[in-house]
Length: 98
Image (cartoon, rainbow, N blue to C red; front, side):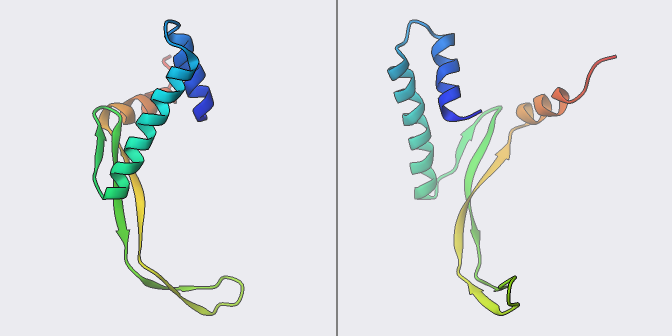
């Protein structure tokens, strides 16, 4: 699902809201999550999961084409850990009852 599909689905589920308002709400929520991660904060959505920032230390890498050693700088990357309820729903989605 892409963001526009999410907005459409929410707008259909809540016909009393204008599509532009639903779009604004989705954008605000996503922007707040991004800003929190930018500050280094953790964002937890109970039952869904937690977003955090992980540090990757500097290391020596290799150019795959030439094999030459390359210095890779330290970086901070976003990380998502699924919540227990989401994990259970996804795990149960692939199983069919007999």
